[in-house]
Length: 340
Image (cartoon, rainbow, N blue to C red; front, side, top):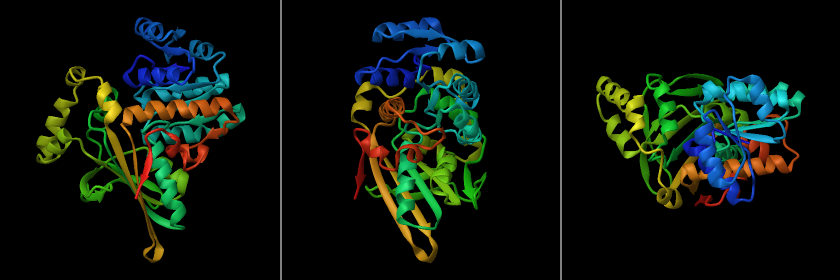
């Protein structure tokens, strides 16, 4: 099942699944919008709201796994995870929200008892960074610090922007000595993704939880290369920046924007990622990765992980992508390559 199948990313996942010969059941709250997508793809569909616990369990009947694509996941993931545990259905999602990973980790023992997998972060958030983190950690034993960064989300979807709007006034988080805390000091630095140093800004990303799970490194920070519009916004004085950002991320403003990157962009654009692990005695390991456009990557990655889960045996309980399928998972997604 793909839940949230009429959203921008949900549609991409449904189209990718069909292209790969799968026949998912499409689901979501809005029966009319759901039917439009299902009819176009020749798929069956089930309309059900997430707050209808019994209806959701019934909708999952006969499904081996669900790709949950309806965010913001801080508001929607718990209901779907509960339904999956009750119906013994493997749970996958495409979140990048740290609190969601933490909550699903806590539900891991119950998922083990139910014999199902809880696999959040099956898209661009966080497959590439999680796998890259595992790669550099393997090359830098006893690493104490991990820096991750990504570039390439230049046309965020409306769903991504709505999630960003929820966290507009919150300071970016970092992990220090194993604990999450607000970042202090400068919010930007310069990192080289393989094409020269680039300015990046601190961000709160799912790897603050998943990289901790995957590597055990106690100090973790994540940066993103801002899109051109965001870069211009960051140059404004703090108070003015917050006012402009609040206007730009209002629901009315978001509704006027494109749903996400167009088909040509998804075919041709690329994203780059950076990871550096630092250990005692000056030990350092770095790696760089290029993948296809982030929303295209999410569709390909989520479907590939669902395919592997259904082929079995799936790992029971909570897992990060690299824990479930190894640090080489990202290289199995078409368009991915390690950079020299």
